[in-house]
Image (cartoon, rainbow, N blue to C red; front, top):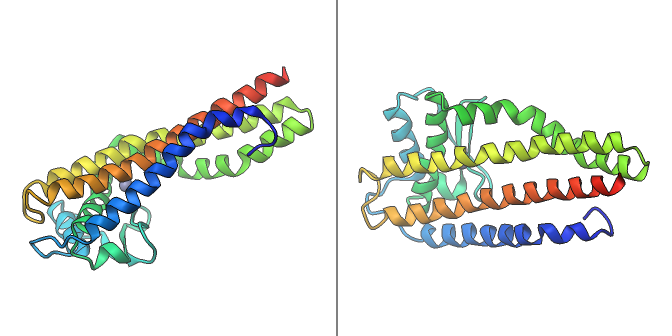
Length: 226
Ligand SMILES: [Zn+2]
């Protein structure tokens, strides 16, 4: 990706893992999108019930376009569910809806990693935008200082990716704990929801691995300069 350098070999395992994780999450979601939950609730209803249980009536549940674009927006105080989750009563939809509600609960409970993660968003955006251009500028112009700044900025993106992991795993475990009470899913359906959430978690693991290995690459290219 950078140019003709052998360090790109380093990221191939993470790249393959990322492709596998993407395939796994799409196929697992598609599979359990075909299974209607016996209780008949939609993703939107489940999210609403869970939020209300935690006295989070102020958080709106909205529909958002796209596939697997579900997210909780802490600034807007909105939980956005994608077309295939919002109005769907599939087991996959219930799992995703409960996971997103898990993020809202994290914030309400003051769960430290999500506070850290949200606080890192602006600086991470800046870091990911500028890291590679500065690094390349430093490399081609023979100014190692710019390479160092690029590495520091890219480290912020790596840190963000690492902090995202506990946030995502915790949201899923909260979701599964809520769903385990049997109100929305029966005991046959619960493992299906769990499979969807585990596949989703793997995509975060893959992107963190990718980020870490890219950082190692930059450090290797930097040390070649000395
Ligand atoms: Zn999440």
